[in-house]
Image (cartoon, rainbow, N blue to C red; front, side):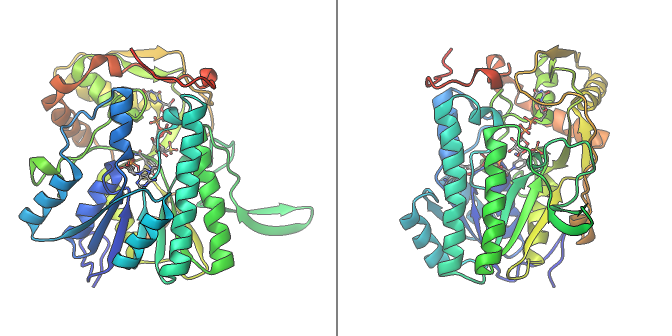
Length: 404
Ligand code: NAD
Ligand code: USQ
């Protein structure tokens, strides 16, 4: 029997695009450990971004080849590895034809909002990489594996911050005496978030035109680093981004607390978002795979467990840091982004829980253990990478090398 939280994969063949990344690596191991046949596809561009911009993960990650080899040695389970770019149709079609997935989990995009706002070149790269890669994935399913379920990582940021409740994908509207259930209005706040909106529209169309089966997971901001499998051996450790380009809010605050840097609240700090623990990311993906969408169905789940404002996160990290004897200060830095800093936010997130997700909530123990974990690596932290690095208003056409 397949269950949400333990579960036998029963040999279900899952291709994980972006399987060398933060969410993808944890998911690949989670599924492999539970009897799914896993194939990782990745072109390693995320590692290249770090090399180009002089960034680095807090945790010392090993090469993808060493990761997969180590996993084979300690678990006895094989993970297939295909290194290549999904924007390259020859590569993708060969990878899909040789592996023949039952499900394709698509994490493989440029995922940083600040990166997409560095300059024209990065804005174009982000939308090209994300939108074209996703179109190739849709064609691969249609032409090569028509029964394959597409599990696509979207983002809660597709919805923006409307002054009404956020539904899961669709909203019923009464207009001039008529009623329809329509895709929820989308308002992206960066070229990255907009790329996800374009993907959602393209997938929705493909489910109608070609009867693809698709689940769009509008994921909130992920925090944490440890999962059962990634702590099983030092060579399996996951990446942990804390810099001003790829680091996300809570993960950044925890590192800042650990190294004695004031917590960088952007603007007024009333920005509210959905958040989830990386241990829930991997379970949500498993739940989506185990309960596939029907052919022709465009299914949308909001994948987060709790919502917090940036100020609330700063308060929690300050309180927990003090318990560990750390001196934690908070600073309100001028907001490098263009976004609402005080707004209504109430987003639904019941569909994954209805299918069996049991959330890990952001309790004190979580922050404690994350802080303790991060403190172990604090000597690897480069303080100069912490500052907010990209100003939305300054994105220009000149290539920005972001050099020191
Ligand atoms: P990540 O950058 O760590 O991983 C993405 C991986 O995809 C990288 O290993 C990269 O090399 C690979 N990739 C990118 N473009 C590719 C291409 N053209 N061909 C092959 N591989 C390619 O990102 P992440 O944090 O693991 O996020 C994974 C997905 O989840 C993204 O789609 C992101 O938008 C979404 N998401 C992430 C978060 C978060 O907080 N991290 C929150 C919501 C949604
Ligand atoms: N923020 C701060 N201080 C910081 C960093 C961020 O105040 O040091 C604020 C931002 O201004 C923003 C909020 O925190 O209002 C969230 O920023 P973030 O960097 O944590 O998240 P975001 O840019 O939205 O992107 C991340 C992932 C992206 C994913 C998204 C989910 O990088 O891949 O799609 O979270 S969501 O936010 O739901 O759209």
